[in-house]
Structure formats: C-alpha cells, structure tokens
Image (cartoon, each protein chain N blue to C red):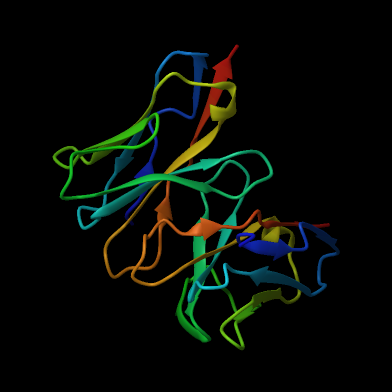
Length: 114
Length: 112
C-alpha cells in the first residue's frame, strides 16, 4: 500500500479558471475526507465520503466547490472560477470505518491563484 | 464557536531533551483527541490518540496526557531527535462526528 496519493502536488492558476484535484485513498478505506490548510493554520474540514456517498459538507464549501467519488475509490475536488482566497493546501485523507479515527493524510495539493 | 487552540506557537528544544507541547480545547463534548505531526511539504502524520475515558497514553517516545477538568492535553516527546522538528497539531472530535477540528499548531525546532 502506497498510502494516500494526491495529484497534482502543485497547481498555479489564474483567477477565474477552474481547477480539479485528484485523491487516491488507501485502497481498503471506505471513508475519504477533504481538508483545506492555509499557511500557519491547522487543516479545516471541507467534506467527506463514505464509499461514493457524500455525507457531510462544511459551510466552507461554497457553490464554487464540488467533490465527487463516483465509484467509491478515487475522489476529485473541483473549484470553479477560482479566487485568490482559494490559495491553500488541499489535503485528502482516508480511513476505514470502525477503525482508528486518526485517518491517513496525503501530501496535499498546493494551489496558488494569481 | 468551539475551537482548539495551542498555548505556544514555537518551541525550541535541545537535542536529547524532552519536549512538551500543550493544547487547550473548549468543546466539552469532545471525547477523542489526536496529535499529528506535519513536516514541511507533507500532510499531517498521525502520532497518537487518546479517548476521554483515559488520562494518559504512551507510545514510542511519546506520551499524551489529558486533563478533562481544565480541557487541556499535552504531548510529551522524550529524548528529542532532529527528525522531531515539525509542526505539531492537536485535533479533537466526538464519536459519531467524522470531522476533526484542528488547532493552529506548534512549531518544534530541535537544536543540535
């Protein structure tokens, strides 16, 4: 098992463009989480999936954000019409329900909106 | 709203000494706490967790202490090594809640 994989590692985009990030969780994990982390802050919860169902969304997840996990395996996070305030590290994590709450994080995708 | 905070943003410790990182939480409903370590350019890495029915839990070179009376937890790292240099976060939740609430982190620097 190679852990949680996120791509790309870095993304620079112009304001107003759309971006999409991908997360491949640990294969046997049925729960997948997205967090956002700005410089000097702890991660903030965005949303989570159990298998393909999106079960909770944070108020931080505006209408410009959408996340999917179509087959209960990998997940994508799309940001439409990016704004400079979207610049952050986007972290994905996974765990198996019933197991330890200390889920496993990926290395993140760092988004810079210019 | 509820928050998790840290007393000190930075901590410098001599290599080989013990370090203590503190965390205060405000949500009295929290019953599960986790410490994460985050190195530069990486995602948070699970270190140790503790449930509210415990006061202390030990791992390899790490100990977490929980004081529910004052809503405080701490992470003790024994015999610190250069590889311990990182930002440490405490996080809290309660069973049934999938969301972790993180504090802002403490940067631990090990001085050779």
